[in-house]
Length: 333
Ligand code: AQP
Image: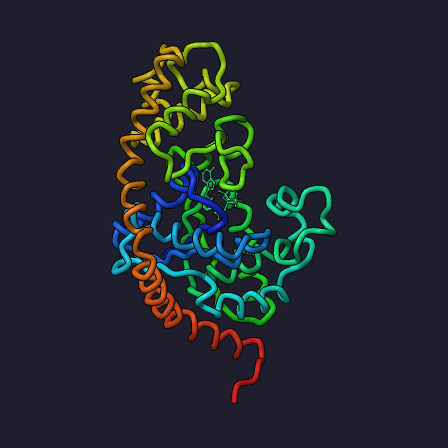
């Protein structure tokens, strides 16, 4: 039977990229009646420096974002990673299964570590091993993610395969990534070659789920574009990264694809298209942001939901970890 796991880092406010690429898909899978487990991966966030107060606030804000977007704590398990110690316990075993070279090949490691790799945290290098543990400690079969996480899911599969081979067992499943929809890779509003990211130093590069209508309209108005009108076919966007990104966002928000969106907006100038996009974004995001603000006024309720989710997550993870310990020969008495 399928079991879905995914997570988002509380490393800043949620972006439209996180929403369209991941969280909206999480909600769809929950509503399809699949068993769904969604995590706030606070231990991943701290692989780069986080102010303790900001980490606490961002974890609650992420929980509020999950709930406001439609995740239901009675139908999905919602929790933060550090409250379920089985993740780090399994990650240690995976650190001993995975190879250094696998980690060093990851593009996220190269991007985030930058030129001075010697000065990056050891946690940042080991990130994919903890991610494999997040997934496999539940024997999850499917992981909805944005395009940027595909490489890490492949590494999760490699770790599962090597573990099963090394110990001669058929224990960990070979997890499938689920990368679907018009917006698996939402790009920066300032640079169509970079992905929209929470940690981009420029706030103008992203739409935050907490942005108000004026901020959204302003960011879309100032978004980088080119002088040509929109084409009528997707091929016409091939060499126009910024234009393609805005039409992609429009398509995702109106539940269609690039071709469908261009049937509606093809031929328009940006002066006409941008206000349409801003109106649509406000229409879709305002209810989420209003609900997030309401929930953020009830931190105790959020903490209660996360505590309850962690207890339910541990009920699944603990026996899988115990079996793993037995397989590898860690003595229990
Ligand atoms: N721009 C994006 N387009 C589509 N999907 C995206 N995701 C992130 N950015 C985009 C998806 O959101 C999920 C959670 O991401 P994450 O928080 O675990 O880490 P990330 O991919 O590193 O996201 P950010 O926003 O860029 O965070 P920072 O700046 O902290 O690194 C994942 O499924 C991801 O694919």
